[in-house]
Image (cartoon, rainbow, N blue to C red; front, side):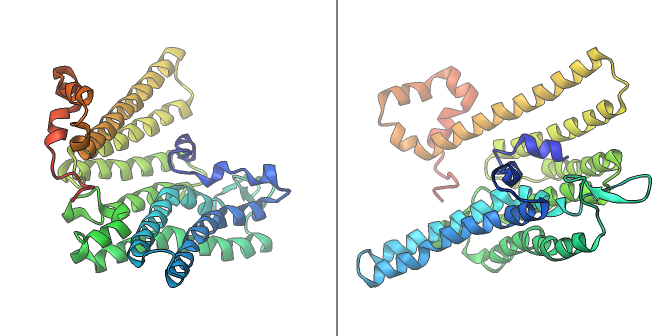
Length: 329
């Protein structure tokens, strides 16, 4: 599970790739605290812009209306960053609790085998910084997002509210405005399995498969995303993760021939290639749907979008006439 998280380190901004011990002369605990604090430092820098904008209004160097707009975008950026770093912060927070027990009965951190779990020093860090990480990141971020949306569900169509909190719900249908929180909980449950079953890869994989299978099942009977291809992409991503995890069980058994291993690898690559194609399709469709009117003014763009082959692949004509793009509502 951790290996699968590292594959997408760039896409989800995994703070674990920031190997602080390679830059600073730090031990595991100092590095752990620094990784926990790194998103907070970034957010503090962003939020420090808000009082600066207020100061500019007081000195009449900037229009008050523009400040309200900039502050709305600032709030949206903060929520976007919290959502982006959430999976990696769950992994970082739980890493101090991920201990492996050996035959003599002692347990050591998986990420730092020189540190014994259960000692006074370990408890002093796990019981303070670890618990704070759980409260703030694992529980706090989903609860904050849900509370904001739940108490303002009547304002979801308000232009200013959308600019402030649109990162949380703008791609979802109105009846599923909370779906981003559901996705956060799904990620958290999968990563929790590593800590709950530290010595059993089988139980980790079976638990993750159960969570993902439920996710795929719910995805087939609901349509949380406004665009159909986003629903399909979400289900395809969960299904591909299921294939990857199931394949890991076969590799872990060590009873596969070279041809069987090659076949499984090819199957996994095909699944992720399909995800990449659907992702590219969705990005292009969104781009066309949002900029259709502007692109129509260019003859080359109009000709390209009207091309029968291009239209068949990317539904360009539908994108052009789509007047209900989620970002324009």
